[in-house]
Length: 168
View 1: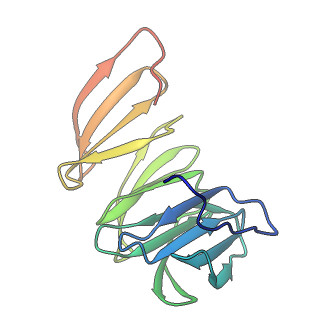
View 2: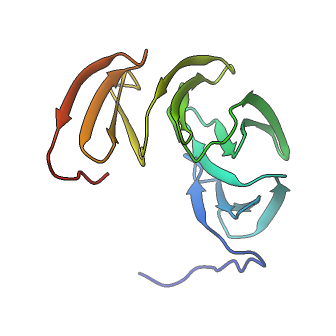
């Protein structure tokens, strides 16, 4: 128990990682690269992107998604990423099983996995978005003082305002 089974040493700095829902792959993320390992820690393949990787996510149905500073990609097969949407100047992206919300310096932009923008709203300083009810609702803190709940259409359901700064 608790013994190290394997270790992978990368030449580049690793910023984050995800594990496939099946447990078959572990994906390491660097600034502009992904490293795909098998469950034993052996290198399967690598992929380089021309721009900074913002986020990556495995959906519950097994789709692997990557957002870069200007694009959203879907892994179609080993080493083949298809661009599904261009959203310039992303600083964060939060994926759900049906799409996601990209955060730019001025907007929240909701998108589908088919490459359509569903809605766009002005916002500022959003650091985290959480989904519930099978992505029917999402929650986020805006401007450090307002917890907002909205539906998947971007319609505000309620707002909790605080005089103190909220974290999250």
